Length: 283
View 1 (spheres, rainbow, N blue to C red):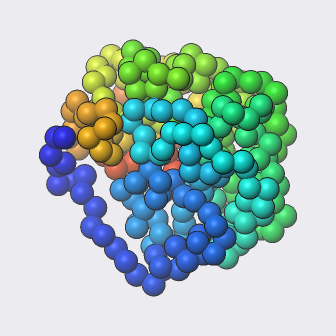
View 2: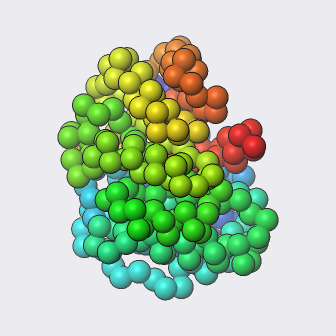
């Protein structure tokens, strides 16, 4: 594994606030992508009384080579989970909540109804809370996407994750064009803000990054996030390159050239990092 540059290292923070967040999550039997995907921003977000909820279990039916979440046969859905998420959102006092999930190819709707129920339950308890969902591709099933559209989250996020040429390596069970079509379908059939993100450092070229930005804009994606890929373990795909902070500034210029007005691009940026600020600035 390549040595991690100092600017990608985060100090461990443990305060009463971070302990409170962990307690609330544990009491409500909830998973977070913060823990399961080893997010480097976990403690900073916990310090702000926020977390990204991971619904439908912590076992994924896909085996993406960059992701720390386990791949195996998942457990049945917990019917109480949507209510538990809503309860935690209220207890944390969240003005903005982000809900993501593992990929559940074993479910006929890919878990779309479970996402929708979670949105409905949050709005019952805290109707003023804005909701962003970060979903899998649902295998491009438009019936599943229609369920999401009907529930009408404030932001629909589906990550492209990497450039088209690297999909077969990083996301062998995914499809670049299908992911773009998912974003396009949501935009063409609703007024929901759409969002997507990708990692850099997997071996992509600058031209491939520029093409991905253009493809996302052609799919009418509103918000873009870009961050550095960090290898979770020796079993995952290796880092090809650590981008410098200056190179991330250049990526911002490329995003602007592609037509993005709302973006967050920096080494430690992840999909839901400071998501509230991106949403507010988009309204």
